[in-house]
Amino acid sequence: MMGKATGIDYRKLWQYPLKQWATLLQDREDQVFLILTLVIGALTGLTVVAFILLTERFAFRLYPHGGSPWRRLLIPVAGALSMGYLLFRHFPNARGSGVPQTKAALFVREGHISLRTVLGKFFCTSVTLASGIPLGREGPSVQVGAGIASILGRHLGLKPDKIRALIPVGAAAAVAAAFNTPLAAVLFALEEVMSDLHAPVLGSVVLASATSWMVMRLFLGNSPLFEVPQYQLVHPLELGLYVILGVVGGLVSVSFTRSLLWMRQRFLGFPSWTAWFQPLAGGIVVGLMGWFVPEVLGVGYGFVGEALNGRMALGLMSLLVVMKTLAVTTSYASGNAGGLFGPSLFIGAMVGGSVGWVAHHFLPLYTANSGAYALVGMGTLFAGIVRAPMTSVLMIFETTRDYSVIVPLMISNLVSFFISSRLQKLPVYGALARQDGIHLPSNEARQEHDQIKVRSAMKPATEVLPATLPLAEALGVVASSAQLAWPVVDQRGVIGIVNRSMLDAASEADRGSLTIMDILDGSSFPHVHTDHSLHWALERMGASNLDLLPVVSREDMHRMEGVISLKDVLASYGVRPEGFR
Figure 1 (spheres, rainbow, N blue to C red):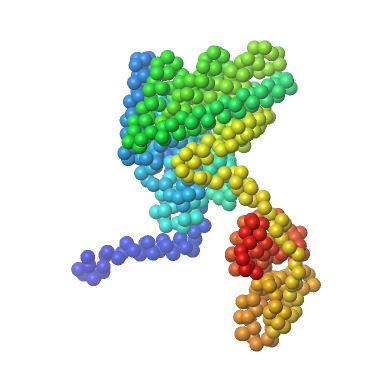
Figure 2 (figure 1 turned 90 degrees about the vertical axis):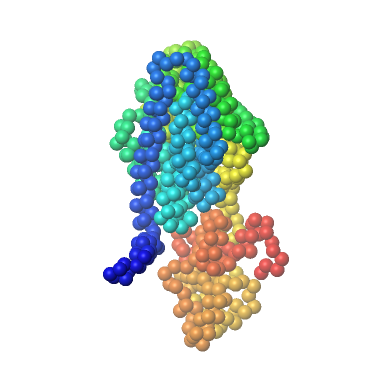
């Protein structure tokens, strides 16, 4: 449409801001990424606050104080059936925890999480948890936070690698608000989501976590998730009891994980048309258990608080370990929306409380009460099931703000982690993703990949070029060489590297009056160190367009310790192409 008076084509006006934005994004992508990190943290914090308030208020209306027992039977059934239909028809990617789906988005789908999935995860999980299905809210919050980051990144036109970098940013922001644990959220995003504690997005993850936590604190206050008394180590004998707790926690973790995977595999084997009412199985199991034992319903953080304060009997805690495990595994395996964070903490508190009750009964003068063991048990099961031991220690500390049990927690976590790793090789999130046909990179695979270092493949530098050598003579020297690149040395040591194409181009332009020194960039040159991985060496070769690099000392970059070539790297992986020079 043209303006009558001015003749301006108004249909093109909207294009100018887009062009300006594209130019800004190209020139200042790092600054845009930083601002976007703050926005993601704030939006995720607001979303998680809304998620918590909606779930709690909806649950209060469904289960009013003094309500009829029939509610405990029928409401989980109705919630599972109705949400199962919505998940099947409209939100198929919103089932389950959300953590495996977030990792799949990061490693497999170029950081893509759709708006439909985010909306479905928010709504379906809210109703599912409010109806009493005993799953957690933290895992779904991770997917929602990562989805917000993915949507914003795509709509702002960021590059795929930047969008992928936003996934752990949103995940950390979600955990910080959902658990009120900003430090543990950072560690979780790096340790579990990215499987890399040295990830370059650390600064953005910290910033988003802090922003989200401040938003949550503004609306919900800064009270810890659990109010617990101060504990202390009564006697050194207790350290041995915490080892026993680690053993029990590790075995329970393996039992939980294997039961969950076995049951989920059975449900996945049913015809696809049954998927919409499969969650009903979880609702029925939860409803029947909740009719007799109301403590089974919901995530149960209130009952965790009772166990942490030593106000729960041994019989009830032991019963809840079995019943909660069955309720959670059935609910999750049948396809309900909800996470495993909360259930692992609940079951861990009951396992720890049971062990502590027995220990205190027989050794009252040498042990703390059962609450201290329940606190350690929470982290023990989390470390065994989720396989994030460092996150577990920091999370328990932040949720309780009790530093006195850090050492027992570390001991028990380590034992549980060791046992669960030996008896169940694949962590639960990786195993769940594999059941869906997605093979996520494991921590072990990355460590094995990085174990092959440059020092194992490098060779002595047998051919070097003096920096003072004229170009014409250099071409004669390299004419019969099998190499395609040569380190350049002077009295200091190695100062650069040249390949045949560089020598040819310089010689044609200069006709022989220059030396090799004249065509080098004196500021820096491509190189690697002995402790670099072969993967890093390949990246350096690709970036510099060289098939050979000098290996230099970290103390003195001019001191050459050898060279590494593309042929040497391939040979380290067992690849020996015919005819490779």
